[in-house]
Image 1 (cartoon, rainbow, N blue to C red):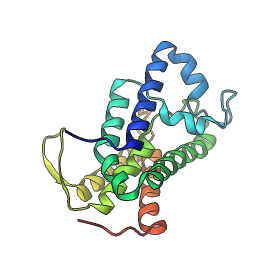
Image 2: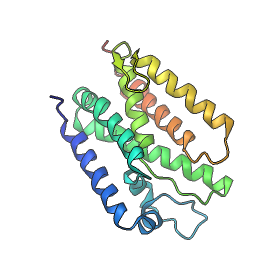
Image 3: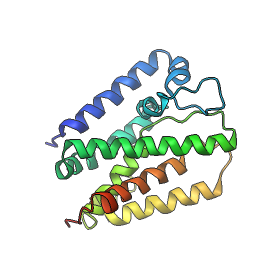
Image 4: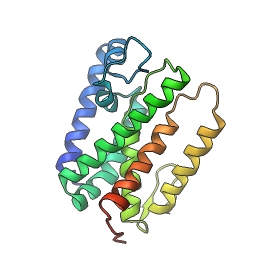
Length: 196
């Protein structure tokens, strides 16, 4: 049976509770706790934190929490609870901060929500420490080394951001920011060597 580490369990519970609370009054939750452009009257500084626990729908939270569970527990065992939580928060807050900067210049009135920036940082950090671990993907059902999975994520995020498709409300730049911050924390700040 897969064992959740304490910090991953705490983050999982907080995200699920926030998601369930959102279902009681979605519009109020978005207005108050999503990360709004600072040019709008809805913006509050605390939203840099709260937006990380908001999710648009079941698939959104499911995919983020799946990544947190699969990669986070192993990473927490390597880094320890305090450094793991710091990594998670830096990646998530950094992704949110970049969203604020981009939205300021784009006059974007659609708020940012989700733990994706933090989770992308976690997945990237995992791949830096365990680049050659073979992962069995669900969609598509193929086996892939962690380093190639992150490379694919990177390529897809850049490609989708570059295409700038109409109606695409995914924060690709925020995902990339999470990946970059994960890389910087593991390789530059903590200088953690790869293990496998």
